[in-house]
Image 1 (cartoon, rainbow, N blue to C red):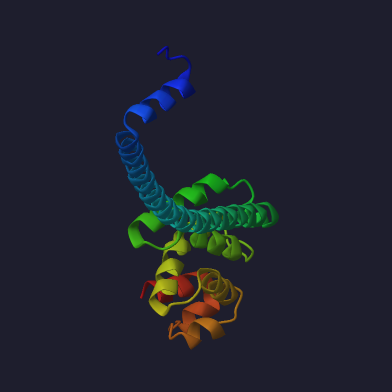
Image 2 (image 1 turned 180 degrees about the vertical axis):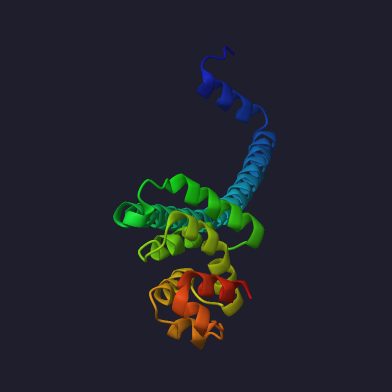
Length: 200
């Protein structure tokens, strides 16, 4: 008997051993079903891992986003402090010709020794620069004001404002924080009296 195409061959095999062919088909079907089950399990596990990875990625993105936002805020604060310092140097005749870079270096040096925030120190110098101080006075008194601010837990800008007001004749803010000023010296030399009080 001549065997032609695939359908004819299958028919021929079935004629010869119908039961054997059927059990073969069953074995093939069972194997295929098992393999499909394994594939489903692997896909489920992969999906679970991807879901966990997705949650992790979202959490990382949230943390990274907050860090970038914080960094951007700090950068903006630093730029604003430097602009205020430059403005004080430009508008105070006693600070004419002063270089902002020298004050930024001073702020970095103080930050390195005291762990005070450098940008806050710059903002404080910008504030004190709006009062009647010279460049030498601003450089000399800044470390003392930083110590004062840290000791009493006062904001750096507010501390410099209190010192500036004292140099202008108003001792109220310094006295409220327990800074004792030599009244007699203050009458003749405000700057010397304030610096001496801050040192002590």
